Image (cartoon, rainbow, N blue to C red; front, top):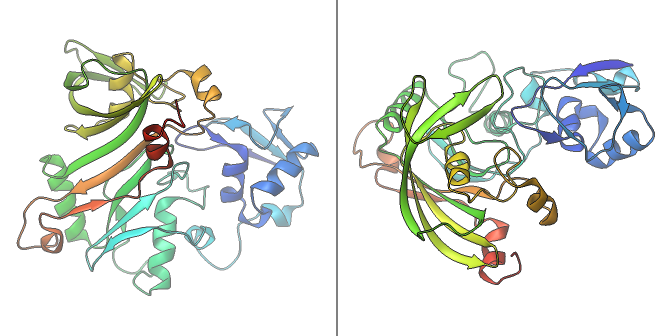
Length: 318
């Protein structure tokens, strides 16, 4: 028997979390079977493979020790799944398309299957990265676990410095697609407000007026299509704050479908939305003709269209 305290940046299904923590256990199907056999308990009670778990929950695993240990012979990233959708790569940068449900990282270093670990495994296989030797490739920004789309990683310290400086100056443009429950009025607008972060609860609040600890946020949206109760939006992120798009759209009565923090959970269940329907669709770099970003000067990179894009257009999702 082993007890494990869950560490995850956002609620996740047990069947998606446990294989990353215990790679020798097997895939999600094995987790469903073990839960059904009552060999996995959540906070002392029985659970199912699809049960949502969150940081701080306690899992009790009635399983052989050999299935619960980390594989021998290397760092945690070697246990990540060998799956990485590379959109662009040069000697300085790696731009990847993250699937919804995959955390970008795990600060507690219990979870093997994260985006950064998949990237490290990919670069390790190309002999471009060796643990404890030189620079460790790094995330330049993050996406929520339930959000899909483009993420920039730096291969060198100079690239990391350049990307972070460009993000701080807001010279890297980010465009998102999302589906909202409710049609925003007007169909195109620039939203302004002040975002206050409640770190203890892991949520943010959008305010109409400034207050101590709140930061200004600006979000542009343009309606692309409607389908029944739903709207497909293109969103330009002018400022980049925690949960900004999710909270800002929810504040005008149009939460993102699948959003368990700021959305309508009854609708989420009805539409069987496992994760928020939000995709970091495009990234455009500023003109920069020298330095580590010269190769991407003025270029735009695009993620695959999310599955819900066409379903809103053809009225399948409504």
